[in-house]
Image (tube, rainbow, N blue to C red; front, side, top):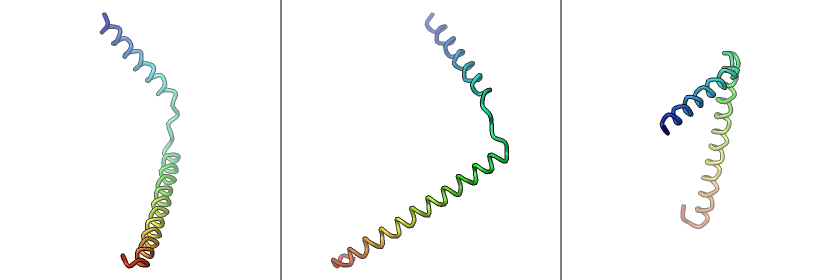
Length: 71
């Protein structure tokens, strides 16, 4: 009896998911391309910022280490 209840609950869940998916407004090709370009540009920008932080911290640490003869 318990398995029947679980199967009914699973069926109900799948039906509700399908109903919600039918309400979704999917992007068209132009919107998808635009959003993809925004993501790519954002990733490039953040990567550049992280690279600059890496180079600057490496330079500063190297300078400090050099002051103490450890470089």
